[in-house]
Amino acid sequence: MIATAWRVAGVGFSLLVVLAACLLYGVSPDQVAFLNSSVGDLTIGFAVRTDDLTVLMLAVVGVIATCVQVYSLGYLQQRPASYHALVTLFTAAMVTVVISDSLFLLLIGWEVMGACSYLLIGHYWERRDARSGAVKAFLMTRLGDVGFLFGIFVIGLGAGTFRISELDPAAMSPGVLTTGTLLLLVGVVGKSAQVPLQTWLPDAMPGPSPVSALIHAATMVAAGVFLIARLYDVFVASETTMTVLAVVACVTMLFAALCAMAAVEVKRVLAWSTVSQLAIMFSALSLGTADGRHAALFHLVTHAAFKGLLFLCAGVLLHQVGSAAFVVLRRYTRRGRLRKALRVTFVTMTIGLASLAGVPGFAGFFSKDAVIEAAWHHARDSSVVGWIVLVSVCLTAAFTAFYCMRMWLWVFFRTPALAGALGAFEDENATADLDEPDTSKLRDAPWVMLAPLVLLAVASIVLGYVDGVHLNWGIGAVSTVLVLLGALPAYSLWSRGADPRPVVLEREFGVDPAYHGMFVVPVRWLAKLTVAGDRDVIGAYVRAAGRAGTLASQGFRRLQTGNVQTYLTAAVVGVVALAVLAGVISS
Image (cartoon, rainbow, N blue to C red; front, side, top):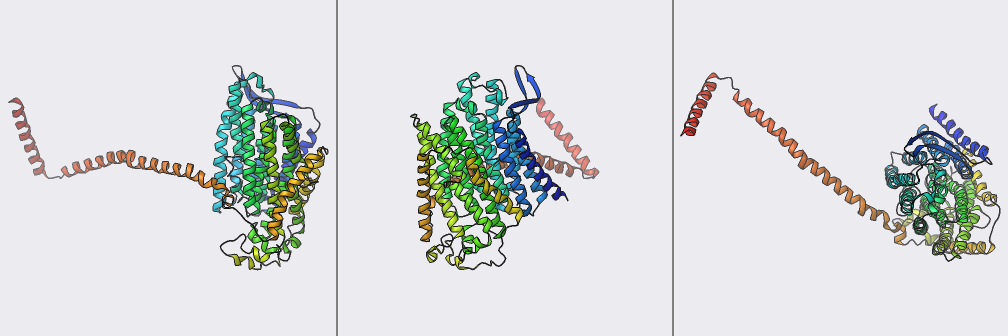
């Protein structure tokens, strides 16, 4: 009964968010303040606002959250009440971030999202990897949020207001502006899993697939892009911050794309892809132009559609097959059983991967081209940042096409060189690929799970045309060539039954072991030293004082024998001793 109530409440709230976006569309921008208090010349309180960016994000969050809630009705059977309650709270937290016109109100939604992500990633708490992934996500995002909190105070105190709509970069000194925006950027880097705080997001995959779709598509990781877009005038006023953002974004997009090229599990490929695509959005924002901001938001919207679709498709594979690992899924491709049994999933996942790769005609093609065009225009103005962004995005586009084609072929199609492919994903036991899986009960997911897939698949095509087709044919041709340059090597390797994975990529550049050596090991040694100091130094004094009292009491107890002769003897001895002592002193 409770689970049903939360299911209804979750779907209802998500639809309410979509309805709010529809009702606010075309309404004049407005702000409403409440619970304000003055401290000297500084006003502290809460405020909400409605404008075009608010409506856009409400629509994205509402649609993705509705798809996730509906999909979860058929996907999740374990602890559904707590799950739907947390997803609803998570959605409400993102809505709070979106409508906030107060840095304090935005911080509340920001932090609630972090707490909900920890609980949702660890939903399968009986699994060790889910628990460790949840703790890792919580700690790394909280580390970034420390800088975010200080950034709010620096910006608010420097500007004399915590109202976002009233922040005036001209009213802040350059030092305050740079310091404040850099601190806010630390929080953005943590929340959106950018270098150097990127490793938590791929390790969050043990959580339910609908949670991955919600977190990676439209809410938590997209909050960083939204924040910079909301405070764009403030960030653009600091050239140093924008340069740092560009460097972080370019390094992240290439790093994550290379990691995705070597991943051997569908959800992990998609997780690294999310990190890379978010970096593309940040790179567009780092250009500091209106075109760059528009391209970033355009790509955010299309990314929400096709990445949400892909994670839900991965959930179908997990739900119906029991695994999303390449080594398991490719055993179903020998007679095309996976494609035939999961027809809707195959078609919709193909559309999602085509949009992610930037295949012409799909939404991802138009939004990625918008980023490339914005970078090209900025680079022509002799901007070093523009050139760096342009080259990085083009390389990332080719890498993206490679891992999309690689995953599509290995998951759904039998390689012509089957003998050469034995052990391609399972080095320890190559003959395991010869095992014939039982496909007699393999069916596509129920309609309640397939309906969101179809909706998001349509969106992954249609959204590219919603903004109107403003295509630069030259850039479109270059983008198409980049897709071919990435897809053809993937096809060639697959056709030869080869999947080379350099050790450095398979180990994801060794960042996690490096972090373990630099941070985890020293912290553990420090903890052991602290425990030893408390136990062997401070505790020793405490234990010694107690032991001394115990020994003294035992000594005095021995004097109480109850024998009168002993007492008289002791008294005589004492008197004699005192007399002798008095004589010695007097002489």
